[in-house]
Length: 513
Image 1 (cartoon, rainbow, N blue to C red):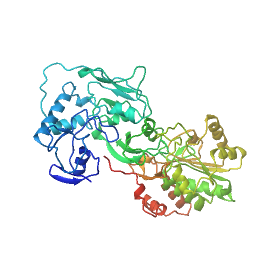
Image 2 (tube, helix red, strand yellow):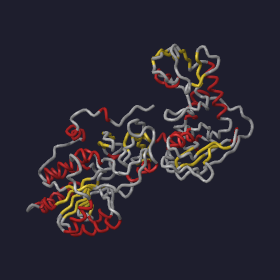
Image 3 (cartoon, helix red, strand yellow):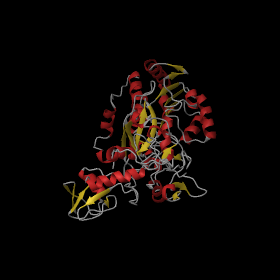
Image 4 (cartoon, helix red, strand yellow):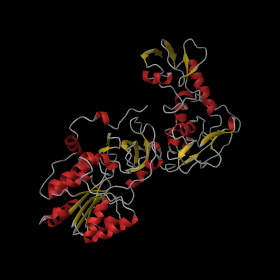
């Protein structure tokens, strides 16, 4: 492998490594705009120029490959002078509207100006005007005055999605990013262009003017939009999710995520069930725990467990499902399990899976397969035929069309007891004798297993809303009220029993590049 000396530090790298990546391995940052590790390398911004011993010209670090014995300087006077010149050129027509720009706080132009330039503009003429707040697509807005023409967005649409909506029109200081005639930036991954835009030229309509980025806290998590389980930065402010951003994981989603998935954060706050309810009356957990235990005892006597249905949800974590199985079999004495969850939806051959449940594979592993779980259609049939007397249901999702759901809701009137354990108020919560509020995945920690069988841990981002609790904690509370306690106090105790072998190789966290 070739050896290279960068700023006096000698390192050994793999053949084909670029100077930019070699410098990063040596601990030196080379500023860049157009380069992105998942895209082709046009070397058009010239911000990454470095000095290579023996070359009379500065070389683009993003494009030039290491050769054995190469000596590189990324901080020489020539390099610093070139960086200042590039930044000054970029800022000639830039509006410098950082205080009102949505990218402020995570803008590379802003960062590099402070680190490498920090000089007053010498321009004394009027700047070139370009489009502002241009609707380039249904999810993305374009500001031409802020654009530095790095072409990341153009290359993303050419090389990643293959949809080719974007191009550069005009020339010189009139050049701008535009869609081809009759088209708009409307592919399923369009907001990724805003993610990779190094400045404030492309911004997400959903996040625009919503929250300053320096107010956000970020937690590593997993998208629940489908069974792919894209790794995300869950960014929140004052106990409310503000946005999802894709988190690098080469095994799952690389640098990307779909638009539909990144908007599923809204479900965590919509129409939440925040307090336990007994026949529509709000109670505290102590009172509702006793009431639930009393009602369960009544329906379970005289072999009532045989006519009890227990619906498990692939929306829940592995820890929740493990305790659901333990609670149903050991405390309630029933193995009459039915499979809930969302119905299948759209898919593609990139990241979007038809299965809109984040943990179907995890549910399968907890229950030793899905063959012993009855379908939602069978649940509806059993309810209508009157073979069930009680129903305990995790989450409110069932893969029904509107007609089937209406029939299901009507059939609930026949039950002696219906317990719903869910995040949201819904048409089912209104029918439930007992409605128990559960946390969203942002308010608890746990594990999902994606469609590829990869175990992915997610962390609690903020405190539970209202009096909601994780599913597994509700099961432990009720088991104690029923005098058959499940002895788990912390989620790591559940994980230790579920995953006795180390799972580091499947962990969702991956080093960012």
